[in-house]
Image (tube, chains in turn purple, blue):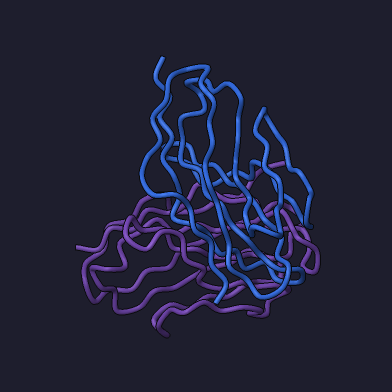
Length: 114
Length: 112
């Protein structure tokens, strides 16, 4: 079974631009979560989608948004990019919500904002 | 809020040495606890987990026991290999919630 895939793997943008990252979960997984990883703040939860609905949201500004499609694929969007948005963005999928679900992570998208 | 604390700083040790990485948590209620490992240039992989007090998670020679009385979930391995060099993250989540709260992570470097 294929793992979680994320595209693109690397991105360079300039301040003020917007960016869209994509995540394809493991087949059959309906929950997709997004995390931001930076050297200073570590791993921080952005949001979770389950059956096309946002179920949880972390403490990030409204510039960060996401959505999930009927095939469980998810996208996250960051508008009006700031230098501090440079990070590794990780997507994780899991089979169900309701149990202490094992989350499977993708390799991440590394975003550099200049 | 719920949080996870890992010991400060990288861990450098020789091959076949004993590894311990401390993890303590603060949470309202009884979370599930996890150890994830991140190899260079890769995403996170689940190493082991425990869902209730006194549970022991184990995988690939690594072990951790859920200690409710000390709110801890320390990771141990009896004899490390160079291939164990990676960053290790302790994390928690609650039943019905896939939101993981992570510790800062510990870089482990194993020297041949």
